[in-house]
Structure formats: structure tokens, C-alpha cells
Image 1 (tube, rainbow, N blue to C red):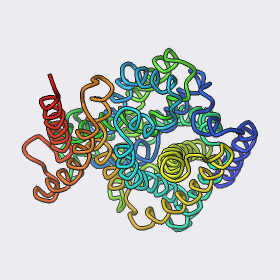
Image 2: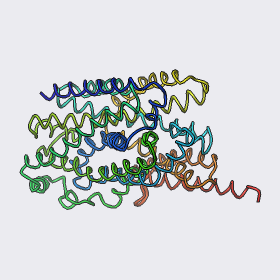
Image 3: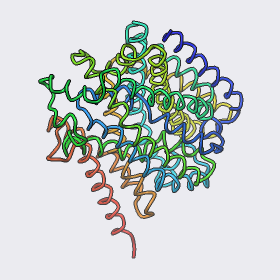
Image 4: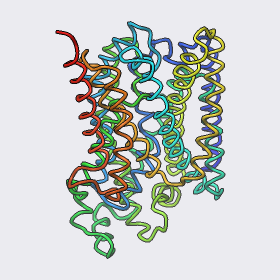
Length: 469
């Protein structure tokens, strides 16, 4: 029954995407949905993109291992989304609509230089493939639990599905498909949490299970701050900036009707993300109580849904998880393919490319990127490891140049290039030298952002001092 449900559901997603894709006749439809997304569509496409492998299967795994304080993994993303919706988003949208920008690369070239655009694109392609791989790994785990299919084959099949429906219609078709996916996720998670708790004997069963498990400490496992200051900062520093400056998310808000749509839709989405953050964590803790010796904690959520819930609810929830991974994967494909087509092909090689050829190039790139994501997923096979690669790279390289460029006219392209080029190797060096621990409560990503800011403003100050009075 569950397998049938997933097959029918997947076919429906593809059919809806192909139906909507008939309206995609121009590159602006594919890139920014003609800048006509309503508050409901913008809300759903944002929330669907943010509810992916990390915020479902990954968050439940985190909850299984660390308990209630795993909230900070998804909660930090919610905080970043609120800042984007209230402050950063409307400001950059104003510039994008005035200058007809399609990508974050367009903005960086307008604000700084083409060299900054190219460097950002190169870093983005490297990091984005890792987050695409994370979504495909989760798809493989879901299909493994449902069908017994080896996880690597599930990863391949999931990657093919995502590539097909995204390639059809870009942002416009994704927005409509995401509306369906968000509805499935909302219903599924809201039903699953009370049912899962009831199935283990209520919340009281979790402290009892912790007490029986010598590897867990009840005081930290059941505490909202159990990760400690250093642990909380580790994820807050990586995720809050990443969800403020993520090129994929910023490009989605380019598709809004107006600034008011962004404030309403993206901010409400951030608030929903904060509330939702508890749900997968509690499901992971319930899985710990029901399956205390699970060999692979990454299977905590799929196993709980397949074996710990009624078949109809398990099927609905697995469809919700499947939706989460598919919608996040298409968001990453969106970010990757539009960047390649716009930031590389059109800007560097064929500035006179026709609109029809640009659309065709973007679709071909989507197929290539989908195949590359599948290959990387088969190699990594770890959701959290893949996500940390992406979020760390994004935060340390883009956060300072993008925000400083939005709020000040003084920084130069040289300052942006220096900060982006220096921050990534500096972060990697700190990570290697401290074995990932950082210095004190400052994680490698936090130190990378601080180093980026120092280099950026040092170069900006030198330029300003050298300018004639």
C-alpha cells in the first residue's frame, strides 16, 4: 500500500509539473516565474525548499542522538528566514526588479564586478552539489525502508524523478508542485507526532528510555540547551547566515509580485519553520524510545513511520518525507542550473544568446547537475556531513560581501574578492588544525566569517584611504 501511494504521488507531482510547464515559454518564467508569485505560492515554495533532508530525516537523526536541543538545527534556519523576510529580502528585491536581475550572481556583478560573480558561482557550484546529494541520500533511505530497495538505487531513482519534474518548468512549475508538497507535509507531521508518542506510551516513555540507555545523559537529552553554548553556536553560526544569503532562496524571492509579498510570505514561512522545528526532533526521540539500539540513526524517521504508525499514516508521512527531499532537491537544482546558464554561459561565453536558447541551456544543465548530484550522493552517503559542507561554505564566503554591499556603497570589488577568496581556506585551515573544534566557543565557521569581515573591511578601508580627498 505504501509503495503504491508513493508511486501514485510521484506520478501526480510529475504530471502537475508538466501541466504547469506549458506556461513556461520565456527564460524569465523559468528563472523568476515572471515575477508574479502570490504570497501563497512564495510561502509554499520557500517552506518546501527549507523542509528537506536536513529538516526531516537529518533533524530526526539529530533528535535520536541528542534529544530536545536538536531543535537548534532547524530553529536556526527559521531565525535566518525571519531576518531574510523582514530586512534583507525586500531590499535586494527592490534592486532585482529595478535592474531585471535573475540570480544572485547578477546582483554581485551589478554591485561589485564580473570577477566577484564568477568566484561566487564557482563556490556555489561546489557547495550546491553537496546539498543536492544530501536530499538524494534521504530519498534513498525512504525508498530503502518502503521497498527494501538498496539505498543507492533509491538515490538514483529519486534523483531521476527530481530532475525530470524540475527540468520541465523551473521556478514556475516548482512553486505549484511545492504548494501540494507543503500541504502533504503539514498534514503528515501534525498527525504523526501525537500518534507516535501515543504508540510508545506518551512523553513519559522517552525519559524512561533515556534512563535505560547508558550512552545518554537525561539532563542534556531532555534539555532545550543540552548541546551547550558551543554546540548551539556551531549550528546557529552556520545556519542563520546561510538562510539569509542562500542564492537559491534569494532567487526564489525574486519571483515575488512585490516587496509586501516578500515580507508577508517569507516572514510567515520563517515563523512556521520555528514552530515546525520541534516536530522531527520529537519523532526522532520517539524513535529512540521505540528502537533504542538502531544501528543507523539516519533510519530513525523512516523506520518509525514504516513500523510505528498505522499503515495509512505511515504512507502519508513517508510521502511527506519524500516530498520534503524532492522539493529541496529541486530548489538546489534551481540554484545550480540558473547560475550556470546565467553566470557562466550567458555572461562569459554567449552574451547574445537568444531567450529560447538560454531556456534550452538551462534545461540541459539541470540534467547534468542532477547526474552529478546522484554521483556525489553515492560517494558521501551521509546527510549531515553533506549539509555541513554546503552551509559552511555558503556562510563564510557570501555572508559578508552580500550584506555589506546591500547596506553600504563604499566597499569595492577588490574587498569582496579578497574576503571570499581568503575565508574558505582560512575556515578549512582552522577546521584541520583544531579537528573541527574551533577556538573556545568560536567554531571554524564563526572564525571564517570573522576573518572574512576583517579582510573585507581592511581592503575597503585601504581603498577609501587611497582615494583622493
